Length: 122
Image 1 (cartoon, helix red, strand yellow):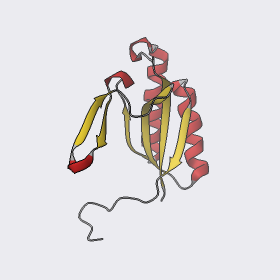
Image 2 (image 1 turned 180 degrees about the vertical axis):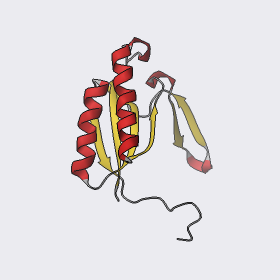
Image 3 (image 1 turned 180 degrees about the horizontal axis):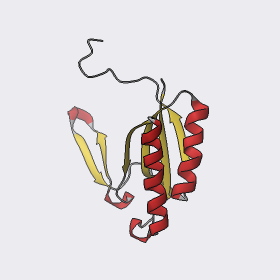
């Protein structure tokens, strides 16, 4: 089955400490529903974008590390789910539920390929 990223976007100034109890419970309920449906492979929330570090390859094999996100935009990924769904329509249905639970914009994207299973030879 294809795998999908369902990513929630937050503004740069998003403060997770202001989330309401109702929003947190809605997200927990969505996670329970995803687990019960057998689609959720992994989920996680991310720290605010101000705590990000960016890495950029430099000549000679060196790597430059700087504070902040690599891309300067007004919104960044605040959390995400990795789902295994039958098709894009099913992934979009979960994305609609994520938008409602998180009260934030969402992006759904299919992975190009699935990683090899642990212990697989190819």
